[in-house]
Image (cartoon, rainbow, N blue to C red; front, side, top):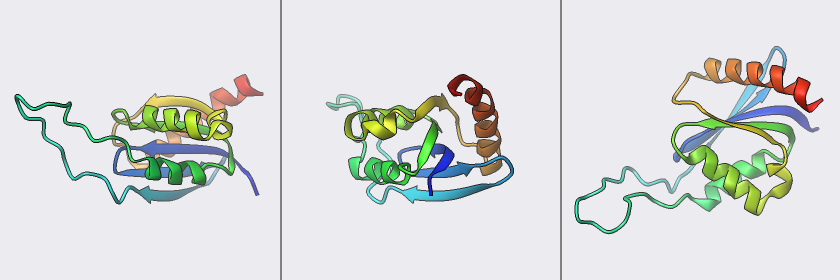
Length: 128
């Protein structure tokens, strides 16, 4: 059965997918098992010192989002926009369901759910 709202908190190591309902929420954690430990940038070294996003990780997260009709992507750094770009290129039907992309550092699960409920409460009026 299709769910309606989902909030994805993502960084380059893991994604937490929350099913957002009026009074309840469920969490699914997807880990990137190929994530680099930590990359240090060195002086006089070619490159930006950043690893490319793991497309298999994004594909797994995208697969878990198929059941939702409205998705909010949040997280620190660039992972949230990289996920949105991946979805736009490889899963356009899911990308059309992304209602928003918001910066969010490292909150607790309760803070993520509360922020998502607040976002969807306002966004439901616009998308109705």
